[in-house]
Each structure stands twice: as C-alpha cells, then as structure tokens.
Image (cartoon, rainbow, N blue to C red; front, side):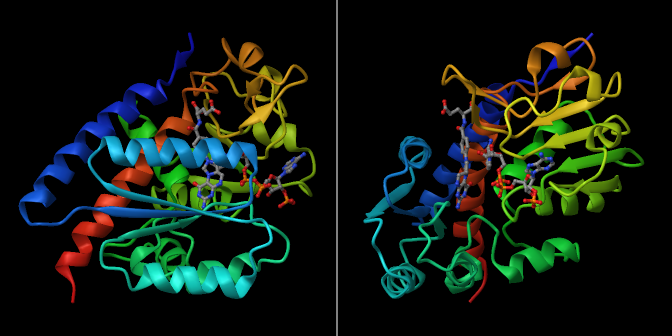
Length: 286
Ligand SMILES: NC(=O)C1=CN([C@@H]2O[C@H](COP(=O)(O)OP(=O)(O)OC[C@H]3O[C@@H](n4cnc5c(N)ncnc54)[C@H](OP(=O)(O)O)[C@@H]3O)[C@@H](O)[C@H]2O)C=CC1
Ligand SMILES: Nc1nc(=O)c2c([nH]1)NC[C@@H]1CN(c3ccc(C(=O)N[C@@H](CCC(=O)O)C(=O)O)cc3)C=[N+]21
C-alpha cells in the first residue's frame, strides 16, 4: 500500500503556525517583511512569485515584489539588494532564479545580508548547514519543507539509505546536508552518475530533483521506499508533472509526494515560516 504524502495539508498546518507567530510579533510592533526580486518575465517564475506574494499578504506580512527588466545589469541588481539590506521593514530578501546570463548568480547570493537570506543560499548559511552549526540561521526552504513532510509522516532518516538525485544549491546539496545531519547515509547523484537506476533502487528515501519529467519509474524504486518528487516539469501535453512517474511508482513506494500538491506547497509555506523566523531573530540580536 502506498501512502500519498499530502503536501497541501501539511503546508496548511505550517501556515496556521506562521499566522499565529505573525500575530505574536505584531504585539511587539514587528511586521515580518519579505522582498522578492524578479528579473525578466519567465512565465513559471511569474506564477511562483505571485503565489508567494499572495500567501505572505494573506498571513499578515509585509510583501514587496520588485519586477525588473530582463536587461537589468549586475550593478543595478546589487544596488537594489543594498537598498533592501538597509531597509528595516524587510527581513527576508529572495532573488528569484533563474537569472539572465549577464548576472553573476553567486555574487548576487553573496551580496544579500546573511541575516536576510530567506533562501538560505548565502555561503555563510550554507556553511552553517554543512557544519550542523548550532543556533539560528536560514536553511533552504524546499529541502527544509521536505524534512517537515518526513517528520509529519513519522519517517525518521536515521540509519536509512538516502539517495538524492540532483546537486543544485537550491535543492540537492542542502537536501543531502539535512539528511546527513539527520543521520541518514546519503548518496548524491547527478548527470554524470553511472547506473543511476540501480543506485535509486538502493534508496530507502529517494529524493528526485533533476527537472527531467518521469526520469524515475516504479521499476527504479525499492519496494516500500519513501519517494520525494521535487520536479516541476511539463509533459508533452503541457501538463505539470514531476521527475517521478507517479502511476508506476504508486503501488511500489511506501510513501510518495504527488506533483502538484506535494513539495511545491511546502516550499511556499516554509518560505513564510523562514521569513517570520528572520523577523523574530532580527529582534533578538543587535
Ligand atoms: N517543488 C519545489 O518547490 C521546487 C521545484 N524545483 C524543481 O526541481 C527540479 C530541479 O531543480 P533545480 O535543483 O533547481 O535544478 P538544476 O537544473 O539546478 O539541477 C538539476 C540537477 O539534476 C541533475 N541531472 C540532470 N539530468 C540528470 C539525469 N539525467 N540523471 C541524473 N541527474 C541529472 C543535474 O546534474 P549536473 O549537476 O551534473 O548538471 C543537476 O545536479 C526542477 O524541475 C525544478 O523546477 C526546484 C526548486 C523548488
Ligand atoms: N530564489 C529562489 N527560491 C526558490 O525557492 C525558487 C526559485 N528561486 N526559483 C524557482 C524555484 C521553484 N519554486 C517553486 C515554488 C513553489 C511551487 C509550487 O507552489 N508548486 C505547486 C504547483 C504550482 C503550479 O500549479 O504551477 C505544487 O507543486 O502543488 C513550485 C516551485 C521555488 N523556487
């Protein structure tokens, strides 16, 4: 029997807690604020940014969307980041990826104040994650949301074999670090991995984040495994599908996240959770 992990339901729970936290901060005169910067008109990015803005406003936060032309220069983007770094009403800054070619993404990531790095991509925060540093710092929202899903469904990574397919800064690498910190034995696979499917079959926890529709099918899954599908892909008919072929995986996997309604809603809910935490922490220090 396969349990379908309900990302929407867990996101709702996380959002309810966030709403309470926002109300508590209001008593202290703090309104959590998020600034999302988007460069260019990529339609998928537009949808994500709109969803984030809507959710932040709904939860009672201050939300700013800064739409910039695709021709924006590195210097212009840096100066806008500097503006939000010194804006006390903004606690979280998110620069939506992908960015156009003329922008040097790592340098943009570095320019964000680590205390306002709501994506958790800054090397300071990534370094803390890798070293399992104690204390408060932001962690990439998609992998963090996945850890929340695992916890909600009583899936403890400790002692399990985990395979993460994909090694991006946004998903694969922080996912591997979180699973390692949670005492899983983690293998990270990517486009140069040999015999990917045999490797996938060794996984008790399989996280797939490649952007390749239906890369993994039921035949590549260990019976009873937990399968987390991060992919946001389009099939030949333009329908939103994941990196996992849900139909063949169902019946083999023990637990599986659907697309849509799995990891995606958790990413947004966790982003809101992180924004509130950054607002809270900004009051604790300095
Ligand atoms: N649901 C959500 O909240 C989110 C969903 N996404 C979605 O997740 C997917 C991945 O995103 P992201 O990590 O940003 O993507 P990237 O393109 O940055 O990274 C993709 C990774 O997959 C690897 N890969 C590509 N092809 C293969 C293959 N045939 N076999 C094995 N590995 C392969 C790449 O390997 P190499 O490094 O060698 O190139 C790379 O490490 C996308 O569909 C994206 O839209 C992303 C973020 C959040
Ligand atoms: N700096 C940065 N941070 C990000 O976190 C970031 C980013 N850039 N660039 C793009 C990716 C992608 N991403 C998603 C967010 C929500 C859904 C989501 O809500 N998905 C819904 C469906 C959405 C739909 O219907 O299209 C679901 O899966 O149910 C998906 C993907 C965040 N990303």
